[in-house]
Image 1 (cartoon, rainbow, N blue to C red):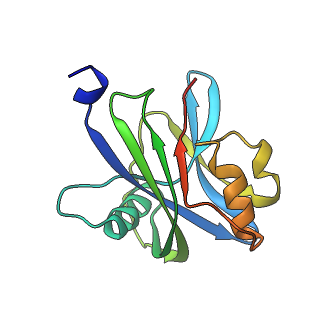
Image 2 (cartoon, rainbow, N blue to C red):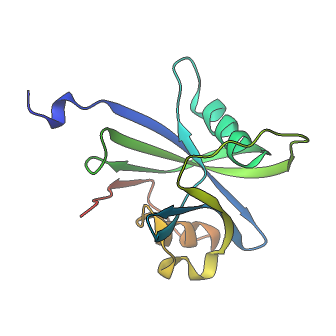
Length: 152
């Protein structure tokens, strides 16, 4: 077996939360390189993908959400210590969770609501999601499986 075959696969449940023409995005500062990712994270054993996305958004933002539909699947085959499979759910924002304990990763520096209309030029990753989210918002045709997001 080669090195790639020995890497584990990690499912990551992501939330696409749209409100007033904008989408919620986690702001990342990686040594001065600022960009955005979608809220969410790794699925735990014994947890459904819907449970994972609800938990992750509650932990990261203190928001209660309701997953409505699985919209996109995109992979990160290389570039990390694991093979990542992102499953993106369109979610409805329900409410803020009172007294929620927020926990973030070390390079998360906040969040922003990114305008959908200008996503194509936004530093949102995986970048293959940008056009598809815009199409979904406008009621246009989308692709569900977006393939591998190369880090190169």
